[in-house]
Each structure stands twice: as structure tokens, then as C-alpha cells.
Image (cartoon, rainbow, N blue to C red; front, side):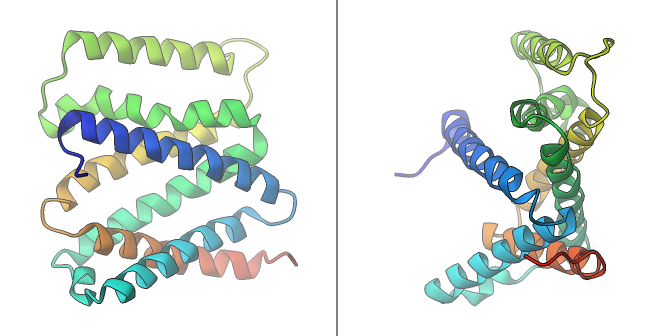
Length: 203
């Protein structure tokens, strides 16, 4: 079955949310055993290996080609930064709060879609986004003694995550999913490797 249109996109996003939640649990479990740099490194390297395995199985090596290496490198760099802040927030905050903050990426996307992409955002969606942000304010305890500095890590990850969504919109018009995923894993692995080596912790 091929997923198309807004409904298909919503299904894919919801499915990715399930995997993000599972990832959050795994990162939390690893937080006491590995450094943040190690977690980011293994995350990126795992993606790189999985994409290469997929392309090797399909024998479509041409899927890895790109005519936009600069934008691909930028896309990989934003993922690296977003992962770094997100995994740090998972280690610093309650898992539920860190997960809530990760979902604010979609709120930032809606809030900026009109400005960045020129898309029309309906009043109903604007209202839903505002309610979502108000919910985040309540969840984080902003303006009260309950506010935790680690929240800034989660918000930084969410904002950078929104940038990756906008980059994806531009890249998917000319690049394959395999090539985008490959460059994310490749750039992420190269970027995290030196920090992981310098701050290596026996696993």
C-alpha cells in the first residue's frame, strides 16, 4: 500500500513518533553506561550501516548519488546537532518531559511553515499549534521554580529539528530517501567520532 497525501504523511509521522519514543527509552537506558558523544556516534553509525545494507540488498547503488552535496552536508549537520541536544535532554530530564519537548518540533514547523515555505496555515491549525505551545509551557513549569535548565536542551533540539524538516522538503524533490539517510548517517558519524574518542567510556 502506498501512502499519499496528508493522511499518508500523518500515518508516517505518527509511526516515526513510535520509533522516537522507543529510541528515547533506549537512550535513557544507555545514559548511565555511555557518554552523549558515544550515543550520538552509535546512532549515526547504525543509520549508516542500515542504509548501506538496504542499498546493497536492492542493488540500487545509484540511489546514493546526489547533485547537492553542500545541502546534504548541511542536512546531516542539523541532524547531528539535533541528536546531540536531544540525547542530552533525555539524560537530564524525566523521559516524559524530554519526549514532550521532542514533539514540539512539529509545532515549530507549523509556526514557521508560512514564513519559510510560503504555505497557507489555516486558523484551525494555528489555534491547535498555540494550544500545543501552551501545553509545553505547563509541562515544563516555565516561570515557576519547577523549571529545569535541561528543558533548553530539548527546545534547542526541537528548533533544529524543525530546520531539518524544511531541508527535507527541499531535498526530497531531487534526492532519494536512501541518499538523504546515507548522508545523515555519514556526516553524523564523522562529526561525532572525534568527540566520542576524546570522551570514550568503556562500554
